Image (cartoon, rainbow, N blue to C red; front, side, top):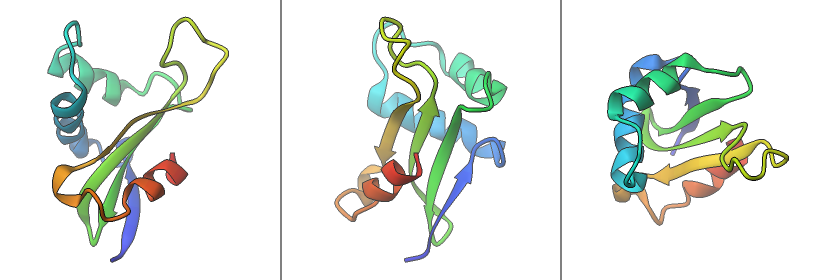
Length: 103
């Protein structure tokens, strides 16, 4: 097991896949379209925001993001760890802890 992280800002080709993972797990009524989510992630509205992909031997196994504001009623709480996701085939193998630590 060789774990590494890549930021989507450094490897933007991962963005559509990450958006698909997040939409499959967390999408709800009123969510932005896939295209809007991809554009938002690629736009990097603030340098302090970033999405990371956890790789195990160069195989993507999960993702986590740091965002400035995830709850409009509490702008004082920042940054937020958001979208922590371990892909289903890799769950139960200890990948969430490195994602949370990196985030």
